[in-house]
Image (cartoon, rainbow, N blue to C red):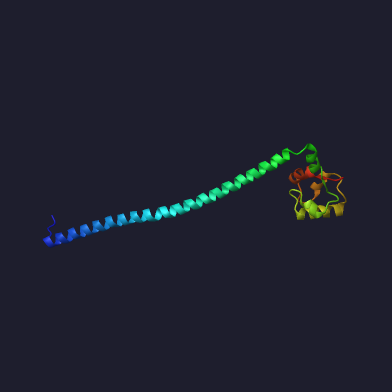
Length: 151
């Protein structure tokens, strides 16, 4: 087949051995670098992840505890206390802009529109007449219906 001289065969063997040893050393070195670098980076990220999840879990547990305690305190109120807090209605005809703005779904802009509407058209006869104000529809009315009055 191929006839190489003795010197050429020695050079070929030398090159093959050198390339083989280089490849093995390269693989070994890469494995050692992976073992050294990957766990350190992974462990740091894992610790950061654990800290973040613990913080989120503790915040959510505190939130749930606060909600449960507020529900418990509301449930333990006497019926007259609950009636006193819910019987305070906001009069659509006499309330100021800041008071109207506290209603759900009514901001400062809609409160100003309510005031402007009553200034132009007179007081509301029924609380459902608030739907005539621009920007207030059925959805907002159903949210504030139990909180407002015209008397």
